[in-house]
Image (cartoon, rainbow, N blue to C red; front, side):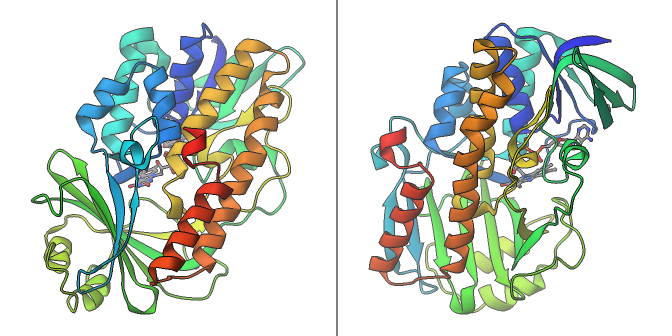
Amino acid sequence: MTENVVIAGAGIGGLTAALALHARGIDATVIERTDLRPLGVGINLLPHAVRELYGLGLGDKLARIAVAPAAIDYYDTDGALLFREPRGIDGGYGYPQYSVHRGRLQMLLLSALRDRFGANTVHANCELFGFDQSEFYVRAHTSVGDIDSSALVGADGIHSTVRRRLHRGPDPLKWSGLRMFRGAVDGDPFLDGRTMSIVKGANGVDLVVYPIGGGQINWVVMLPEAPPGPLPGDAKWNHPGDRSQVLRHLDRWNLGWLDAADMVRRTEPVLEYPMVDRDVLAWWGLGRVTLLGDAAHPMYPVGANGGSQAIIDAAVLAEELSRDPALGLRRYEDRRRPETAKVIEANREMHRTGAPQRPADLARVTAKYRTDTNTDRSHA
Ligand SMILES: Cc1cc2nc3c(=O)[nH]c(=O)nc-3n(C[C@H](O)[C@H](O)[C@H](O)COP(=O)(O)OP(=O)(O)OC[C@H]3O[C@@H](n4cnc5c(N)ncnc54)[C@H](O)[C@@H]3O)c2cc1C
């Protein structure tokens, strides 16, 4: 089989890249090792990423499946407001922020791609094992045979095969020492029905909770477990979590506007995931091969930036490849590698800063984060 661009991975990054490339007249085929079910729980898209999805004509559909938070509110465990940070349009941005179920967003992108450009733009149950390249083409070795193309994009997530083949040296997952327990559950709206809330508990225990559309509430509880260091075990998004570890803390809280312990008790399943990233790479791709999204820059999810940065990668990749097929991959990397390196570092710093409770400290830390990551109002 011969294709123009092959993208390994039909996550948010890979599917958006295919849509963006096709929109610029470049054929792209996505190969995905799973059978493409809507997995995951909630995810946030920042205005910079939402702008790109609007540019692809997906704004109305996105608005129908997502919730646009007006603010992030910080509370103490008695439900008292510590600090409010307006977000999206209410924060003066040109585009909304969206909270959405990851799987629903993935299915929206998938059906847009197939409806617009044909069912064959995505091959499910097709795993990439490796690749070879020459001056003239790159050959992807997959579970259904070899596929030749002019470019291969590794959008295959935090455990990327493409990254491992390109970067042979040690590249371990770096654990923050935090474990995140997560879930999505049906629930009545709380507060104004579109606020993302962060409850600052004792000893660094944080709850992040927000509506994600479809009558569902998404929650994440961060539990500090160890000093930063090597990760015991692995990092899998679908790993079942023990809710009693979370309830030990939440049972003592009295927020008033939400029964957090009841929400966790009713959630099925509860998942757990360690907060991990990898060090910044000195380079991403070689020749006809590059990386995108979590494969290129896995990051702590503290700034709601992982999915957003993957979407921005996709837009820049399409722009640079359409400008210059020969130099496009390197120009894309030259633009995106330093930008995303800043986000990885800012996320680590946000985590190191700990859990400020005073409004002035929260205001300072969140403003610095937006400036460091180019996600303030001046950029969208
Ligand atoms: C199952 C799952 C659930 C998630 N749940 C959440 C969540 O609840 N909240 C959140 O904030 N983030 C979640 N994430 C991560 C989040 O989606 C990403 O951080 C972000 O959207 C960046 O997306 P990405 O496309 O770069 O990578 P990913 O979303 O990780 O997508 C990578 C894709 O590549 C596929 N793939 C991997 N290896 C190969 C291979 N060798 N050949 C072919 N295909 C391959 C994977 O199956 C996956 O579909 C989840 C990721 C996954 C895979």
